[in-house]
Image (cartoon, rainbow, N blue to C red; front, side, top):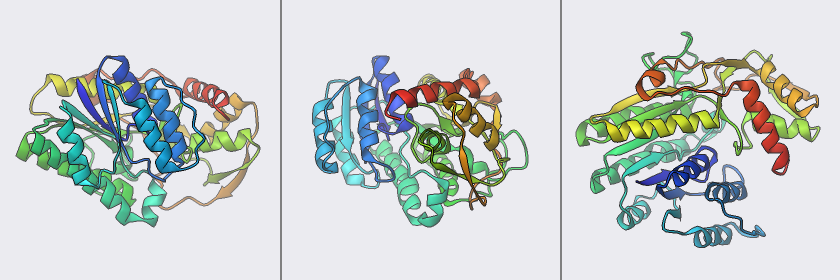
Length: 342
């Protein structure tokens, strides 16, 4: 199979590319190496995902990425330095390749940054996604997997969160854009027969996690004896999902898309295990064998109090069975962190 993976040089995307290539598929990776975080991390992700080792001096972003594209090109793997907001640029890629399915992971991420710049989130997350659907329509691509988010639930009072719950009260622009893609996706499914699965990811962590996310940031700061920003009293809680379980859920969702017709589904992918901020911090401290110095700060606008995935539908529909409990997942992450340039 020939897959387009948008955001294939990011945290989740690079792991997915690695698995798809390992399973004998071809991958077209579309990534704009956005400055949301250091592009050098994405270069390292890319190389690790395709099993290559190249020397980089990291002098200039444009030249480094062009070198990466040149050095990684193969029959099975193509990397394009491309923004999904640019429909004409995307169309050139679609024209070059036969595409069986699209796995859309690219997005402007982050709840707090979306409050500061909501229009950028609308441009990337909504317009960029619609560009892809318009090209699906033009090139008769009928299988589309979209990364949504647990943030669409907002401060849902019903625990655990079910796909049947109303999600009409998002509390950040990021969450609202993800909800919009689910709704607009149904339009393209209904009008143009695009089979579609939207996966609501619940706080994904593991090797290659973005440096701005709490587990990665806490681990870095504790290990280097820096003060960590600690929001609230530690009672906020998340359903942390290990990267291997997320990839398993994505692969099983792709298989479902490929073996069924008239598909429009929204599916939670979580661990179904809730860990509060105090527990998360204590687990990292234990695995690093170091104590944190906390800077207590008020809760941030847009942050939800608790997330907890009802994964009944994922279990029954795609055979999703997460296996990595939080304690073991943090152990694996810290081991990776200490080995890879802590």
